[in-house]
Image (spheres, rainbow, N blue to C red):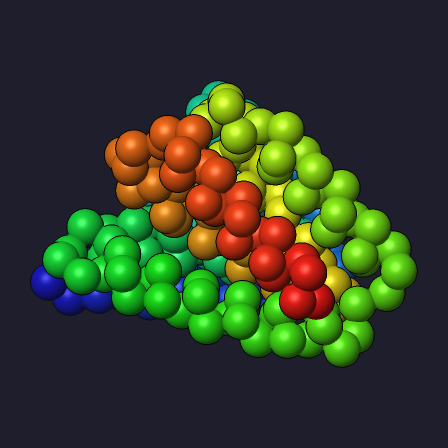
Length: 205
């Protein structure tokens, strides 16, 4: 039992040091992580500990680990932060009521975004929204394409504030909810209703 605890502490120490190097820029985006052998030699740890540290870094979105390749450093960003929790979120969404909980937060955020856009949207934002709405209208009879244009229309709302957190949140909602949306009937009549709702949002803004 103590060996496991010691191994976990050693892996945490390696993770903290690698994280610090990434923050300082000593390990840059796209650079190869030191090999397992190099990590073992530098930190005086076993291969098991080195591998556990790499798995933890990958789970946090700080490195990309691929089979038969050296792990590659990823620049920390909002997308990687969200990706790091995606597995947990997808697990939670399997519980009753969780999808509705998540969808309700999306609605609340988008109400605030629409309100913000009504006050702050620039001419180019309105043009982007109109273009997305037109694409949405053209796809009403093609449900797969309609879904993509639906996401694009909502994506414009998240882009208006020019806050990099918001587009990452939009991509996360799309990723997390898509498996559940894909099981819903996608009929042209439903698409027309959704397009009418998008048109009402656009006109209100």
